[in-house]
Length: 257
Image (cartoon, rainbow, N blue to C red; front, side):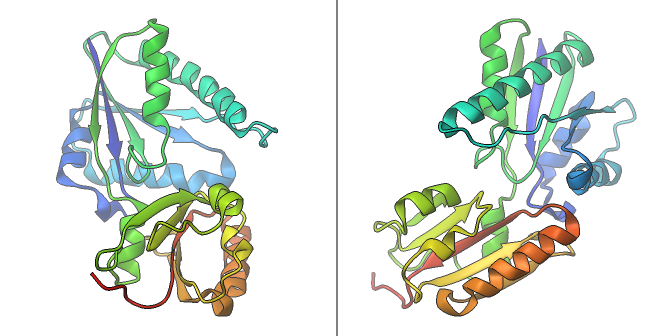
């Protein structure tokens, strides 16, 4: 039976690769590398650099594939994402069927960690449910942007006795700052949702291109640095053609145990 490895490759620094991830790359006959178009070529190029640096298996080969662009959100966000995932599932199915031998091993290289705000595992489950190709699945964890953010800001993710909540920019805009979290990590925020909050005293720790030579980090009182982050973010996005960023919000002060 075919075997698929879903490998977390870290948040952007090739040195985020774990020994387990490197060994996984070298077990694979085929390394699947997604291409999200010219504006995001850096993302595919990083995967190529990782393969150049760490793959020593002379029998492995790389297969690059185009990733369809997600449509602009319709009135139903879930419907838009569902249609997008269905299109990618069809591509995955073709790759598995056409590029892997019946007893072959393939690897998908996933930015960050496959289990945190990435849909590869859900999409592969769609492929499995179609019952056109059979495969075993193995997941290899990776360093997340959340971990890289905390490391770059030289801070602990949580405060003493405080919970941590991970959410999205869309949720932050719709629901505001969660009341049950001492620290809130926000991912997938394309519109600087922190500027919709009405508490200027929140502390924000923001980072983009974490772990890479292009890394940018800013922290401070939201009322003081929110506008600066929005400006710096847009300038970076225009310069590179894409941006990947995340941030942590919390009220000032250290809570007691």
